[in-house]
Amino acid sequence: MELSVLLLLALTAGFLFFLVSQSQPKTHSHFPPGPRPLPFLGNLLQMDRRGLLNSFMQLRDKHGDVFTVHLGPRPVVMLCGTDTIREALVDHAEAFSGRGTVAVLDPIVQGYGVIFASGERWKTLRRFSLATMKDFGMGKRSVEEWIQEEAQCLVEELKKYEGAPLNPTFFFQSVAANIICSIVFGERFDYKDHQFLHLLELIYKTFSLMGSFSSQVFELFSAVLKYFPGTHRQISKNLQEILDYIGHSVEKHRATLNPSAPRDFIDTYLLRMEKEKANHHTEFHHQNLMISVLSLFFAGTETTSTTLRYSFLIMLKYPHVAEKVQEEIDQVIGSHRLPTLDDRTKMPYTDAVIHEIQRFTDLAPIGLPHRVTKDTLFRGYLLPKNTEVYPILSSALHDPRYFEQPDTFNPEHFLDANGALKKSEAFLPFSTGKRMCLGEGIARNELFLFFTTILQNFSLASPVAPENIDLTSNNSGAAKTPPPYQIHFLSR
Image (tube, rainbow, N blue to C red; front, side):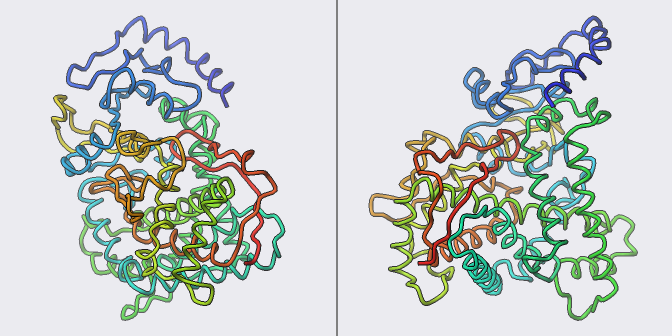
């Protein structure tokens, strides 16, 4: 892909020369400082080949916690550090509540759906989504029961392998997907369902592609690169295939809808569509339904499953941590009953380990882009309405002011002197403010119950010695994924 990008730049050299000869870099005195951009290329020459995150961290060292980077021709303001991110997204929550553009996803989402919408559309869809997900399990005991049942299904499936080495990717995808599917589609899928497996493969590949080098380059020059073959087209193709499935599911729901007994998110949305069909300005239309379901399905599957994959790779790397978690499980839960959410408060070490896994793995290091909804004065800089803003969540999760060893896996980061769970202002894996992840509650419940149920039932072993296990992510862009690995689940 690097060669194709270079070829593209060569093909555009002719009109770039014209741009350079006719234009001078525009200065924006109201923007925060940053490296001087070139016409069209922006700050390409200042970008680190190891990825956008490394580039931004290097620029932060030079320009401070608030600076401007030109991603191609467009200026984007970067926010680094816990205090800076919280000041923007919490103290100025409304002003920073717009959604910026994710170039590789925009051809599909186009500003629709609960995650990618802005303004009144976003507020309307978020209120509806939170209320509906709560009605169908989120925040109720029923979601705990769903997770417990799914965890037991996973345990039974893993026992069939009798300790043989396996790649856990598919299993963790399946359990995470089945929880969100129960809420959105009203059903769970068998682990051998071919259509289900294909959807999971599409989600997995898309998440990996989003963190690739080529996707990061596309973020800089999408206006030109969209006309050429590349990763962005494969992402669109994958998402369109998932949308086709969602479309079929919506039609099945429509044909079997019982207005007095909605079964799930889709049913509830269809009823709201019918209620507001006379309102020509309603946000409850087909496009918002499709993209909202796509967003919930994708985010609810891949982020939790990727965290679980990373969790057990880390446990293989640090077996003494896994053993200490199992000691706490044996003491609090034992071996004869299912873990419950009530156990979490009695298991501070396990809870600290899960927090540290989320901090250390840093799955969305750059965060989803925001957009200011009005001219906004922030730290002495005037950000014009619609300025894109990137909260660099990695800079909070690795903030040395809050974490003594930010680049080291250490559960003690979340334990006080008495061994109790210690909260941290810098713990922002779900972001913060008005646009923080709406599935945070269910994700935290899933991680605790899946993690403890597996370690209650299995000891872990690796074909690779702990000192030789590499935790380095395959990606350094918008999404991080762990390297592939094999693991033995040995019945306890």
